[in-house]
Length: 147
Image (tube, rainbow, N blue to C red; front, side, top):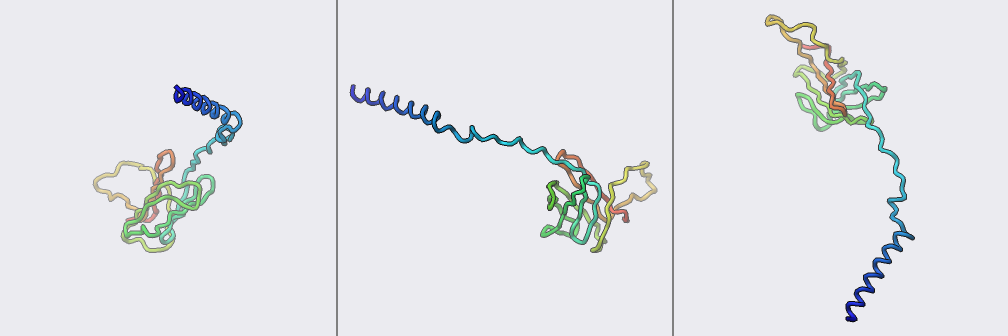
């Protein structure tokens, strides 16, 4: 019987401790007013230029992002995420075998004017850059020179 009463007393004291703790020492997480989450930054890439093993991408808000090959450089191109800007969009660079180091301006992919016939040879650009934004829209940039 003593053990039962002792058990009841200890249980009552412990439950009271929890109430006192919540009253005098509230959970600090409840007191912190967290700011609302930052809105997802989305910017459309407008222009790009290939400079040796780096592509510089200008966004609609004027930010310049870098797509450097680094260790992932290969003869056919490279891929990764844009750096040195708030938009870490994934990108892919494809190079033709005849691309020489230097500066190659890239323009947005032209819309097809008319369907290609069997007698015309399709244009194949030397450099193709594809950037995919946070909303999963893809933007493709081509070099004006091709083969």
